[in-house]
Image (cartoon, rainbow, N blue to C red; front, side):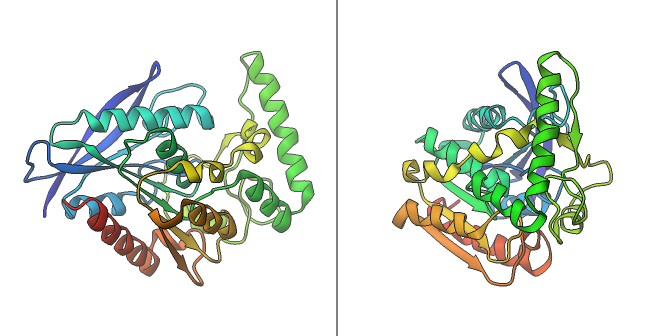
Length: 302
């Protein structure tokens, strides 16, 4: 099935978020499910997510793929500011927008998240009982576990350095100054949000040339407190959790524990030998998107 893609925008609080809307050419009003998508930590819609969106649109789904405020094509100042609260607000605004789209069944809205947004979709579905399905790919389900993972591969000094820069960024922000940025990814031993062996080459393999490898450092002060796993038992819709067993960024153990908390309504797929970024490209992508399409077809058939 062929599809068309167009630019749309929607308000989130007082900020304009921008998105790509994928629509099958043969649209029948009010009958098609819609999959709402957004990226992970510091990611934008053009950083490896287009192949997933295109696969879903080819299968007959409407897809809304958006950028968070402060990132990519969306508005919001300062740039590269990652606020968990604001991103969750953007998710709800995107969901509400999808429900009002022509050709979309408002009762069949699915959420798709990867890495950091893999946790967001669990929280969003827990807060909005009308969400019909969730896919969490390589998800970050426990910020505390993620912080401890950084300490494991980079040392406690990395946590202290990130916290120090984060505190400076937060203090300057109180006076309308800054932000103070840190790289999202860097080589092992360098200061960054992610500096595992595969983080920099893995992320850069899916990002466009204009992607900004930086974020406001203040996230380091609150990351450990963000734990989507605590919302797992509040998710009432079918879910698919996909875990990369060699994930160096989002601990596999936390994702598996989250899936188990969801119980029978959750399908758990574990990919042996796959790292955090392998799921976006090559055979990893083919395997992941195949499982996602089978899941969507079983719970939200076109």
